[in-house]
Image (cartoon, rainbow, N blue to C red; front, side):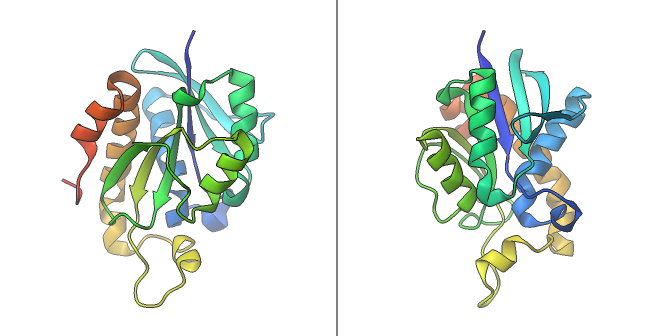
Length: 192
């Protein structure tokens, strides 16, 4: 039986709970809410919930490590659930995409994203599916590392629930309809 592994990236703890870097956590939390699932601690150093999405066995997860060390927990989950690389979806924040936009792709580099870098190193490949949640570039000369660790601005927070919901829809579509169809449906320059 095919198992899908959907991993939202973020940082654990209250300090980071509402930051831009936790966009991946927001999306898997929405998937858990939709399915009435409760998070359970897994030996891979992750919180997991086993659910059904698009009538497929799916494990959603939030690594309990910091973003820069996401690879170890993801590799542990992949091995435990015997998930094939083509059935791994990673949801992460993306600086190079405008706030409100969503991009999906297969593979690629890490583009300076330390969570993706850690995953590539730990599983030996970058050829997994990605849901890239646009957070936009920092204003002025703000350091990007500081920007991703700040909460969303008040104007952004008004749209955030809709954007998270849309990203969760895209995950279900990836599993049900595949990458190309999902890209055609969900790629936008700005949120609709």
